[in-house]
Length: 290
Image 1 (cartoon, rainbow, N blue to C red):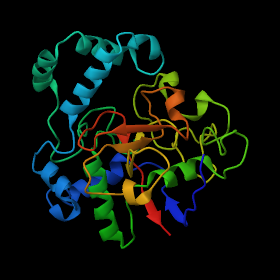
Image 2: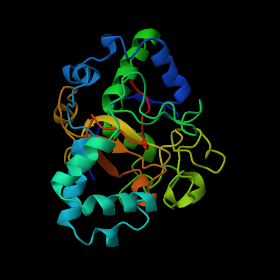
Image 3: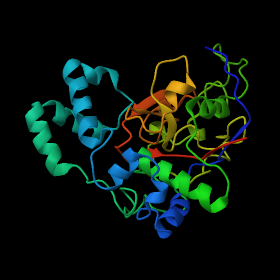
Image 4: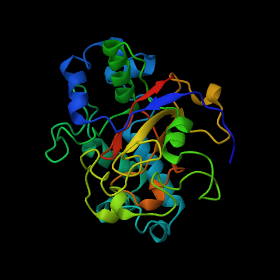
């Protein structure tokens, strides 16, 4: 636990939806390099496998599985049965066999929209947009800032947590709410693995049951993991080190998702991901300073 003085800020009430992201696509966002503001982002847009892509993520997973032969004993409720089956197969391969399998099966980087943009059941207008790299989420923020004349970007990690947890006072020993709605888990308040919906839900679908944070934000627990601006670094948080848009390191994800259990949906939980990768559970929400 550590005190941080954060200036006033705004965090979007909900994750960015497919309907909202469609405006960026329709405006030529994937064709206009103006919005891809770093060298890494532009190189990704041109097709380079920068900052770690799906291949690196899978090789990292494979290494963890081989380093921990009893890994299945520790993942009950964390991964879906299909994920466990896939990891079992990956673990049975040699590194060379894995690379050969991945070369045939991995999706290519998207160039005209998010990876699952055309997938039925995932592309409803009121569902959070998923399948984005960190670069795509950042490009949307840059575009929206220009068209609205308001500053938008991905939230730095501590700001995201401050919005989710509220004032740093009890009920939890560490300060602030364990979950956005309070100290106790409630499966009716969030789209996580416990609910077995197994796909993103329309934004705000859990509000009536109480899935709202102390500052009015919705879906900060479950539904989709949310990219933050911050590099995944050890605490204590150092903005000079963590907030470097040009860095190639892993970025921090927050909030848990439909495919993970309640432990990963805690307001304080941190996850890391390479910025050049994407999957079915990754989305984002907007941050604005001041």
